[in-house]
Length: 431
Image (cartoon, rainbow, N blue to C red; front, side, top):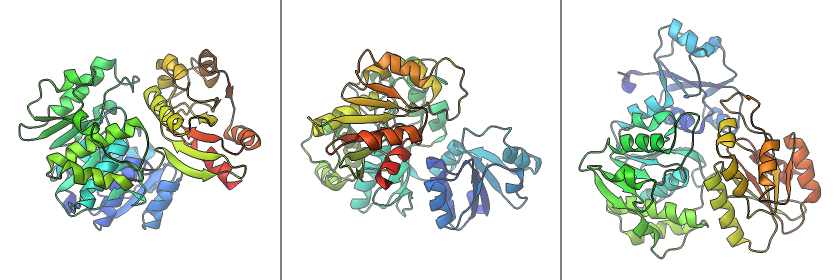
């Protein structure tokens, strides 16, 4: 069993990951010596270095020294990684980020926000409500909070608010006292067999709650209902909070649903729904979630959004179309993972109906290898049954040049996807 009080030096492999970097920040603020490595440097690693954390570019056995007490790795880092292999040679304990999250959550009243969509925004909303009501939470979120300019808030109160990911059943490492399930949808089918398999993971997670704990869920959701029916914890249906009349600092029906879940959490902790809703009036959102980036030289408005699943894409574009009913919406979309693109190709094809033009970048591989069965060209051919104007680009450079030459004043340009497609919007704005 890892005793964090006795740990002095920790090395993080894959430290640029948005969740694992929050743990690195937390331990650094606690006075521990932190180092990290990642395959490439990024805005996240630059922020870590600004805190005084040494970050190595690339993975090398030399990065692991015998004075390190603990290695934490992302779940994407295999045993064959040279730093993991060196740690094992030196008998340094190696644990995953989810396992580390389990250690951190054990001694806190942990509010774990799970769900296929909306986790990040809901976590950020809960964080803001608790902060505004002087509950001083510790927060680990899968994005950068606009107000904090960080993915981590160090609080002195009893509450830990954490985003809980279902991939590979990672969230089962967490010790929750309150679980939020925003929704359940088919995703991560490179790991899960089907929807029932996904539901079984959520059921196991919710089953960790005791009778005095809370489960916050939309019991009207047909994919959620079977999961929550036999749980011992106090079940709170957040759909009634969603129907409250309140103003939001962000737009879209899905954000109103996220807000309903956050208000339900606050009410369970003793904050009145009215006070909780008041806190969300000036909620500014998070990095890469419906983020307004600026205006190009030609006068086009640039947004960026992390949406990478058909349900998320449709919800985001529905919200943008309501906000901009007559404007031309151009989406630069980078599909995320070969498996997700292949498994949901029909759903992706129909998710962009509110866009006037779709510009497809190459698929972002992340942890996967290309087996040749799927490509952006194949996706384009499916999309043309639903959308008139779909084009494929071989590089960000080609896509950026095309956008810079064709965007005009009043156009809404959206970079979309879980990879690095946001760079296109930033290049456009730099021009």
